[in-house]
Length: 477
Image (cartoon, rainbow, N blue to C red; front, side, top):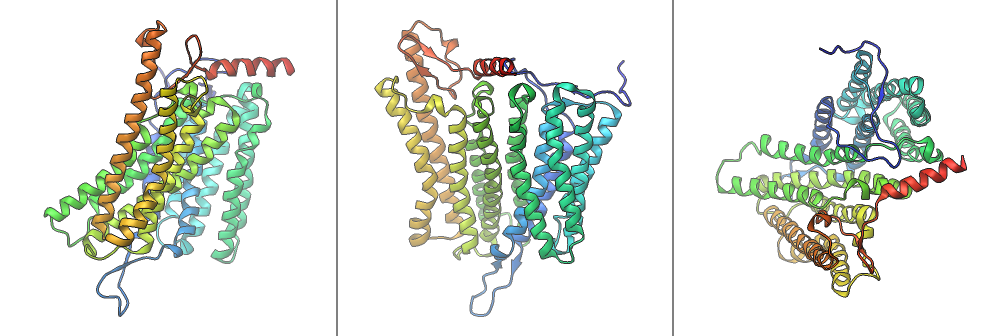
């Protein structure tokens, strides 16, 4: 029988540079944070889905709330919630603290997250003090979490100390915002605090490699992917449990539900069906690509939220105005959300396994053209929503049902063609490896494509680069 210690010491659970990463399970406390993010997303998206009666001369079609009045505050609310969530994921990918005091620290941070979420409910101009208080409590919880490693774990001391500095600055800014006499002044302070949060991620780059602790890439990226699932999970929650009150379960109801669910499901499939291995991940390649990956992931989370709101608005309009063209804001959210998500996906894949998929001078002509075709198609897929918008939606029809059907067919086409090109390239590599006398077990997953040299297929391992860089850092130190 094992007993939970009251004080205890946090335990460093990650590997060191050049060591193999072992699989880890997600901690059970993550569920609490995921549910709070779902609640926050629901509260942030709700004002975008409120109906307003049309003015005289506009007919009987109900109008949705104009986006221009809401997007800035929604973005600030979303960033306030997701920043604390992402930083906690960074902690759990480095350390484990199963002591009672450690769990009290987790609870303190969770309480701050709950208060931040409560500040997203209702009119932001009236509840901004609740959000500011929640951010302060959440940052204090993170300071407490990282303070114990600073005291007790020499290997992670510098990393944890550098991470705590932005928390203290953010707390000071939020305290200043609490004493502002108007919401407009508080918004300026919150914008400054948000920008500082983004820039502060670069602070840790001032440490040399042997002074930093590499985080568990698989665990961290799995938690980042959870944001996608949480955003789409909230959208599914909204369209299933909150249908239009006068809708009847007839053919139109089921068709609208099927179209919306397919769009959400296919966006998720596009997100997850091609993934790099941990050794080939951008976070393992270099610090530059790691930062590019993180910032692009953060931007993609915002694009996902915008696309999710556009999808829910279009779904609602299938019932309140099924024969009318969708409003301009819903159309822009849906179209631009899809385009920017695709651009983000292409960039993120390029940071990670792009080096294996880029056309290389040593590739045989067939593989070179297939690789070039893959990247050309991904670029075309990023522009495809705009082409559909400027043709079908502009000159043929822009009713909610047509919009959702076109988006669904477009995503189906992108997934099928991309999968076909990827498998063609992988098949060519299998043929080359068979000719080189290598077994099928050496081919690896279809998602990772390595370079071909004159003698064999060479796979570049980031672990080797880490070991070399670590040796250089130690010798220079």
